[in-house]
Amino acid sequence: MTYEEFLDEIATLLTEMYDLTDEAAIKLVVDAQDNDYFVVHDDKEELRTVAQAKLDATALYEAKQNKNQTQRKQQQRQVQKKKAP
Image (cartoon, rainbow, N blue to C red):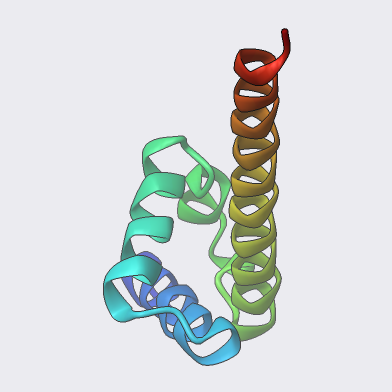
C-alpha cells in the first residue's frame, strides 16, 4: 500500500479499535508524522502492511495514554503542593 494509504489505515484502526473520533485519530497520526515516527515506513514499502498498521496504531494510542496519565499525575502533584501548609 502507499504511504498515504498506510496512514489512512492507521487512522481507521484507531477509530475502530479505540473508539476515537476521526478527528482525534487523524490528529494522533499527524502528530506522530510530525515527530518523524513514520520516516522508516515511508522509505520501506514492506513496512506498510495492515499488520504493521495495527502495531503502529496500538503503539501510538498507548503512547498517548501514557503521556496523558503522566500529565494528570504532574497536575495532581502541583495541586497537592499548593494545598500543603
